[in-house]
Image (tube, rainbow, N blue to C red):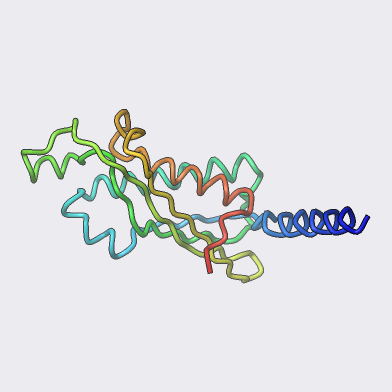
Length: 169
């Protein structure tokens, strides 16, 4: 009897903790995305065009996920995101121009790290962030240039829309 009560209490506490963690972050009106300084230093290597592509891809992922959950609103807050790091799965055009020994058949594991702050309409600042890097090169053989970074953006956007992308403390 005591074990059943203990288990029941533990399950209720876990459910409450999950509900608090997954609470929506509030509506968003503006989304600002920048490239972090460390990644911007690699613009000469990756090419500015590819970094601009990453910004556009993250914007599309976040806007789509928030729109599906009703998280876009003209009277919402501001979401300021920074792409802090991104690693391509295949060489970018700029990298292949700089190093003729590279080929588009070259591949590796990639991923990305995103940080930022959601400023709610009432001025509250909520840190958000997410990072994911592939760990198994077998998944990279059929990947495009930024496939793992795109997967990171999509996962972040879904978690953000569900209120689960709070930054690690």
